Amino acid sequence: MKNYLKTIATCALVAFFCSCEGEDGAIGPAGERGQNGIDGVDGTNGADGQNGTDGQNGVGFDELVKYGSIKINLSGTTPDNTAFTDESEFKFTPTEASDLFNFSSVSIVNDSITEYSLRRFLSAPDDIFQETTARIFLRVINPGETTQRFEFNLNINDYAIVTDNHKFFRFSNGFSDTNSNVTNFNITDYNFDSTTHNLTFSFSFDVAGAANDTGNDLTITGEVNTIVLEGINNNAE
Image (cartoon, rainbow, N blue to C red; front, side):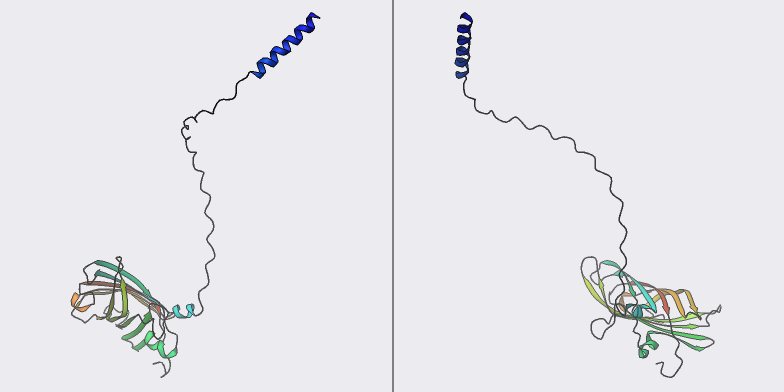
């Protein structure tokens, strides 16, 4: 009986203390954020992918460039007195029969004189918008002999020179080795392969400011690598 009463008393005390627990207090303020961890090491770059396949040239492109090009470098001072250099490759040739005599031809005048007439467009030629050209006439006297010498004429027509400061000016001039304003004229590495009709040579000269559109002294250099054709009837011209 005593044990029974103790058990009842114990249960009563437990119930009393459980019913006397207080309510939870308010949540305290958040603690300060910890420092960021050290960044991990970057992974190794993957291997470069393979280059894609080159696209095909547009229709007619191969025909227009198959006779080679004239490369020209201009170095001097612009009309507003800014130093500049400009490089271009004139490589487009009309393929009409009536044009070939003036644009890509060789004439064997006699055993002592060979003449070449070259003209190339800067872009694909048309009748209105693409008329920028470089034209060269070259006469070789006594070709291959120790007395070999050259007569040379270069015309650059309606060429736009665009400078690094986003300005441009029109350059349209002709130059001859006999012009008193042209100095230090030189032709090197002249070669004509009579089998392939491949004509190659380099040229360089200086031009006084009074004789070119920059109004300042100018140096012109160039490289010719062309195929020239020989007319065989009186319709060649």
